[in-house]
Length: 543
Image (cartoon, rainbow, N blue to C red; front, side, top):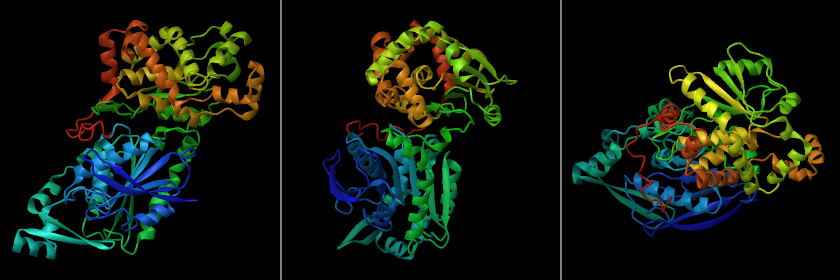
């Protein structure tokens, strides 16, 4: 049952931003939230927004930008920067309440603003919906409208009048306003995080923002879906059901892993292309695509993969590894695990490097019982176990980093796969080290680690056997195979307490040199140049 609530959020200028929260599910069961961003002189209920809020099976918040609808402040024709600040204010407000900004839907100028926000916000947004957004604007497109051109010829400005519910709203548009809007550069969308999927919905009969703009977005954005609606104009007049249906259908197609993630209280800021279906292998994913802290680059993709064991991989799965150009596989498992789960058969051009860090004696019932006790204590207990992993695994971890330096290159485009049994603990700690060295934010590293909750599971019958073997409840056994977000946050804190930084661990424990650390970063980070990346980050109190 939907519950509607009007909410007022104060921005950094002391202005109230007013919107309506449509709660389809309680925060405890689904923490995803979709934001709606209207266009110039629009408001939270204009066009198809109210219908979309009704049909979308997700919690949503549609709000008035400053100076529009019920929100305070001054409106303006070219207020893209102001819109972005308001999006940041709203996003921060709900994130502090425990929501995840799962998607932002924008129309016209609202699309311009939310696309920009998505390329500069500290935490990638999983989905952006761009409805009738403008990529390239020319002043003649505006001045050639008869009523606009006549007003500029007579007065040097145009008074734009719009009815918003029960009142008339007017905004004076000057030539400076038009020039500012036309000067807005949308090329930044080329640097959209690879973990963000963008849907563009555009009417073929749009005479305000011609349909070629949709093609320009499609060509520029890495993860893009294009949906053109025949006979629809800029405001989708007479086609509200069509545009809403296109958006709802898009989310239904992308909902499978996200639903799993939400049910486990997992931030789902990852798009489907990260996951790769390797038949017979669980938890297989690319660790590339994440942006580094300062927005100057992202982690090279299709270079390092992680997964659970390969003991059940099929011939089709092996072909997928070959298609991904995986040439090296590092197996952190010890012999008892290999005996139980098996190995991938020998494959030409794929070399397996045994990289065990535990001895056979470590798998005795007594040792295993002690080992699992830490996992029953929640994130801090698991973090304590990982601290031990950092000590015993340093030699093997070093071998992987040295291999990357000596055997891999940007030009070769070969890839490596790292795995243990579940692809969670030993693999997760090593991936944390690599991402941390490259400057990926802690919260993103923790999210990447927590994705194992989606990719790996243990059948109930096997959980019962495990519980019996180590003397615990089935619930405790289930918790032990989980990958809590908070665990990796604590691990990073513990690591810094002892070594100062991730790089400190690599130099002190793994005996890598400063030069080797720099070379690893240079190899793994794909640089991007983006002059406006600091737009919202200059106001951390808002974000």
